[in-house]
Image (tube, one colour):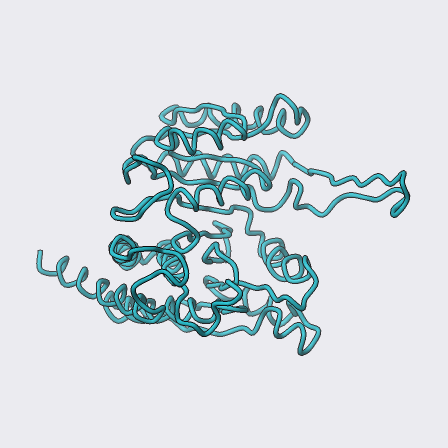
Amino acid sequence: MTAHRIAVAPGDGTGPEVIAEAVKVLETAADTFDFNFEATTYDLGGERYLRTGETLTGPDLDGFKHSDAILFGAVGHPDVPPGVLEQDIIIKIRRELDQYINLRPIKLHPGVNSPLSGVTPEDVDFVVVRENSEGLYSGKGSFTARGSPFEVAIQESVNTHFAVERCVRFAFELAATRPRRHLTLCGKTNVLTYSWDLWARVFDEVSTEFEDVTTDYAHVDATCLWMVEDPGRFDVIVTDNMFGDIITDLGAAIQGGLGIAAGANMNPEGVSMFEPIGGTAPGFEGTGQINPLAAIGATAMMLDDLGEESAARAIETAVGEVAGSLPSLQAGQMDATTSEVGDRVAALVVATSAVETSR
């Protein structure tokens, strides 16, 4: 039996605490569903940077490239200038491993309180496909007369047909596997006339290959409005890097908060990285009051990508059940410690397997 090679980067703050629970559930799933994995831990983040001056080294990247998947915590430190860790670790990993898709399921589990009045789990069950390599995150731009009253700052949004097409195609392929088979392009064609003209043309071109997928278009501001007023209208949304970054945080709030929000930076042909969406949660380190469900949900996404579908479904089901049983998903407001929440999920994974075996 081949072991899955998992690179584990716990990161800073509460990252190590939630990743520890994710690995606990991963170990339980491996024992229960009869697969093997080998985990290699990588020291990445603010503490290492302050200690050594290093962010992401060549050996780190080589280790990631020879892994089957990456389980990533969070990086951030108050003593490190903004942008250093984000650019030199997170975005660098995405670029070096060509993780061109950011995938964010937005799902409301039964029993979880959404800030939206009257919504049900049937109303909130969609996926955002975000282009993860270009746009305003390309790092292109310039200053003119910096520091003077006449300063001009230019940030360029770079969009290539190649990157847009592979992102849009991924979204169509995903939509074709879901029961509703519907895809929404989220953009701003009325103002951003160059980049979104390209996106719209590519979207129309690719749509001719997927006759069983229905489509529509929504400006990003309308998308935000409808995500609040009528989230059930969405099935799969595809959008660019910046808009995707914004609407996925809105989606996290709709599904109950960052404590349940998991995501993936994906290279469908290579190594993908799975992570909880929330950050390092300063102030909660060592309290045992941080919610690990997002990290555990990211583990379910990872196992699904690795072909361990039964284990992935069992973890996702267990995460949903535990989430619905907690009075709150917010840090410090649960009725259980971080470790106890992990234990509950692990126990339910075993129980789910026993029920399926008895059928």
